[in-house]
Image 1 (cartoon, rainbow, N blue to C red):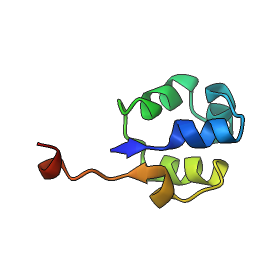
Image 2 (image 1 turned 60 degrees about the vertical axis):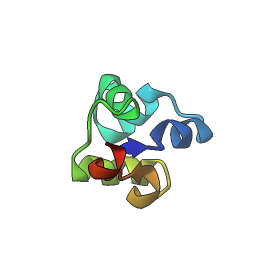
Image 3 (image 1 turned 120 degrees about the vertical axis):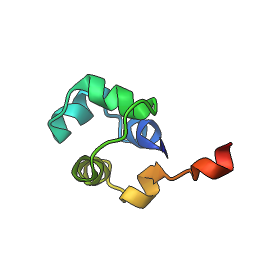
Image 4 (image 1 turned 180 degrees about the horizontal axis):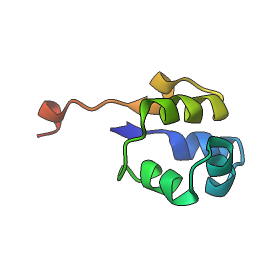
Length: 69
């Protein structure tokens, strides 16, 4: 699943550490999500969206695995 976290975070002038602190996770977690190495839990996805002033639908882009093959 791709996401727009980095773009949204930078538009708000937040560092990974700032966002991590707001969401009660580590900076490494934010980095892994931004680099599509980790899919967040549903509650973390909503928390990220709230802190980035957007919606989960705007923040995450679902890619159908069948279409990417």
